Image 1 (cartoon, one colour):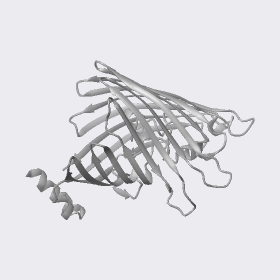
Image 2 (image 1 turned 45 degrees about the vertical axis):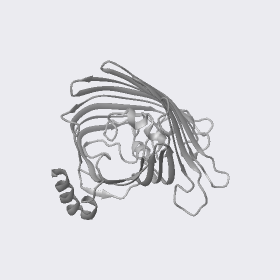
Image 3 (image 1 turned 30 degrees about the vertical axis):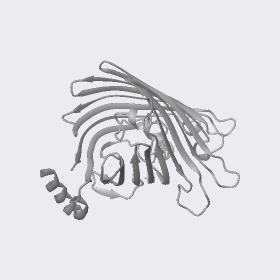
Length: 348
C-alpha cells in the first residue's frame, strides 16, 4: 500500500499520475554527484577535442551521466507471455537539467521463446562485458571515456535508435542477443544496416563471450566501422577476475584508423565494500603513412561502499597516459583524477 501511495505521489509530481496508479507500472531513477580534482597535463587543449570536454583541469562537481529517471510498464498476456514498455530520460543531478538523449525507449514481448524489442535499444556490444565489467561506469574513473574501452554509440556508450532486437532464452548456458537498425541515424540518406550481436556462455562462477558491431557507411566510397571483442570473468571466493580484448577497423569511419584495447579488472569484496583495480593498454594505427601510432594506458584504483542495495559512496584515483595523441608525434600527455561521489537509486 505504501509503495502504491509513493508511486501516485511521484506520478502526480511528474505529471504521470494515470501511469503511476496503474498495476504493472514502475517509476525508477538514479541520482549521483561527484567531487573531483582533475588534471590534464601537456595536452594543450587536445584532450578537449579527444574527449568532448569531459577532461578538465580543475576541481569539479559533476553527475557524469548517471542521473536518470524512467518508467517501466508490463502486462501478463497469458501462455507465459508478457508485453512491456520503457521510457528513460537523462538528468544532470548536479545541475538538475533534463536532457533529451538517446537513452533506452522501447516496447516489446517476452516469452519462453526469448525477448523481442523495438525502439532505442541497449546494444549487446555495450552490455556484454563492457559496462557490466566496470563498477565505476558513469563516474570520473570509468574506462569507456578514459581510454579503457571503446566508446561511442558503437562501443560502450549510448544506445542504437530506430532498432529492432532479439535476445534468446538461456539454453544450456548459452544466450544470444542481436540488435539491428536499418536507419540508425534517422535521416533520409538511405539504409544504414547497422548491427550489434553477442553470444555468451555462463556456468557456475564463470562466463565467456564474444561480441561484434558494425556501423555501415552509405556514402559513396565510404568505409564501414567494425569492431569485435572477446572476454570473460571468473570468481574465486571473494575475488573476481575479468577482462576483454577489443579490436576495431576504421574508427569514426576513417580508413586505416585500426586499433585494439586490452582491459583487465580485479575485484575484491569484503562485507559491504568492493575494492577495484582495473587497467587497459590501447593502440590505434595512424591512418596516414609516416605518422606514429597512438598508444595509451589507463588504470583505476578505487573502493565502493554500499550502505544498501540502493545507496552507496565511492572514491577512486584514475590516470590515462597518451603517447602520440591523435597520431601526432608532438602531442604526449596525461589525465588524472581523484574523485569522491554519492549515489542513490530509487524505484516505486
